[in-house]
Image (tube, rainbow over all chains, first blue to last red; front, top):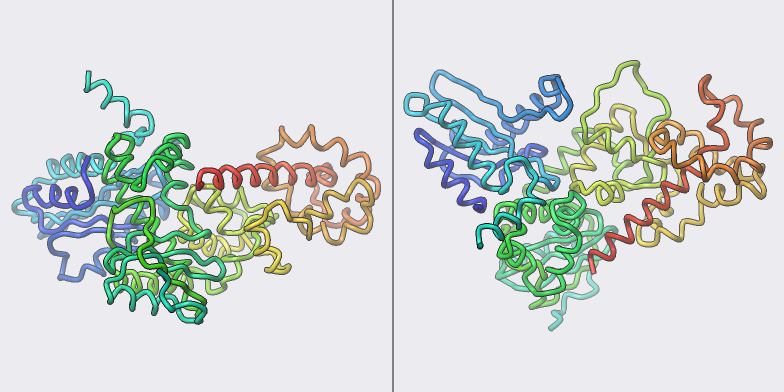
Length: 144
Length: 339
C-alpha cells in the first residue's frame, strides 16, 4: 500500500536497522536508499548485493528442488551485524530486492525477517503476486 | 512552443543535461534507431519511452498485472493515468513507482545512446502517465555508463543487440544450465525476432533482455543472423512488409522450391529445435507446403540433416509462418494498447 520511500522508512523503523535499500539485482542499481551502508560505500554494497542474489538464484541449484520454487531471502551473518536480502515480488517484470543492514547486538533476526517480508509484500500489495485479481475486489467489499 | 534546438546533431545526453540544468519542463524527442522521448518536469526526468523497451502499460498488461481493458480505460479517461490507477485501487503506489522507475532507466539506455543524433525539444509537453517519480539526469547518466560496461563485460560483441536472433541448432556442450528468463529467450529466437521484439513479446525489460542475450551469445547458444542488419531494422516498424529473406523463400516454396532453397536454408535449418514446442499447430498448416516442397527439397538438404530429423524438411516453413502470425498479432495488440 506504500510507495518506495514509505517502504524504506518502515524498514529503517525495524529495531536495530542501520541502512535499507531497494536494489535492482540485474544491474546493482539502487532505486531507493535510506540510512548508512557498510563501510559507507553504497555503490559497493549494492553491487555486492546484486551479485549475491544472482549467485543464490542462478549459480547454484538451491531454488530448483521443485517447480515454482524460488529464492525468498538471503541472510548474511557477520560478527557485528545481520544483512538481510529479501526478494520483492512483482507481477510485472522487475528484479528487485530489499536490503536491510541490522546491528547484531540490537537486532532480532527472526523478527526483522518477518517484518521485512511484510514490508516487501506491502510495496506490491499482493503477497502471492496475485494482485491482478485481488487488487480492486477487496476495496469493493470493504466499501459495503 | 518549439525551441531552436532543431536539426542539429548532438549527443542526446548533453542536450538532456543542459535542459535539466535549466529546469525545463517539456519533451525531448530523440531521433534515430531506436530513438524515443524524454519527458522533463522542472528539470527532473519524469518519464522516458522508446520503441526498444516496453513501457509501463506494456509491462503491466503483458505480465497480466492489469487487464488490457483497465489500462485502456484509464488511458482514455484522463491525463494522469498512473495516479488514476492507484486511486481506483488497480495498483499500489509502490508497484506504480517501481514499474515507472524501471521503465525510465530501461528506455533511457536506448534513447540516450552515446551516438550524436537529431533532437527536438517541445517545451510544456507532458506524458499522460502523470507525475510519479523524479529522476536526476546526472544519476541516470552515470547508471547508463555502468550498464553499458556490464553488457560489454558479459560479451564484447554487440551483434545480438540489433540483429535477428537464432538459437543454436545444437547445444555447444553436452550439459547446459540456463535460467528461466534465458530459456524464454532461447525458445523465442526464431531467426526473425530482434532483441527489442523479444522484450516486447515477453514483457521483459529491454536492457535485461540485452544482457541475457549477450550472456547466451557468449555461451554460444544464440547468434545474430549474419545477413543484412537493414532488413532487421525494417522489420520493426512494419512487420507485414517482411517480403525479403527467408519469409519470401517460404511463401514461394510450394511454387518453385529449387531456386529459393539457398536463401531459405539458414532459417529452415535452425527451425526444428525451437519449433518443437508448437508441434500441434504446425501439422494443419504443413499440408500445402509438403506437397510441392518435399521431393525437390530433400536432395540438397540431406547432408545437413541429423539422424532423428528426417521429417523436419517440409515442416519448418508452415511452423515458421505460425510464429510470424503470432508475432504480428502480438504487435498489433501492443500497438492498439498504446493508442
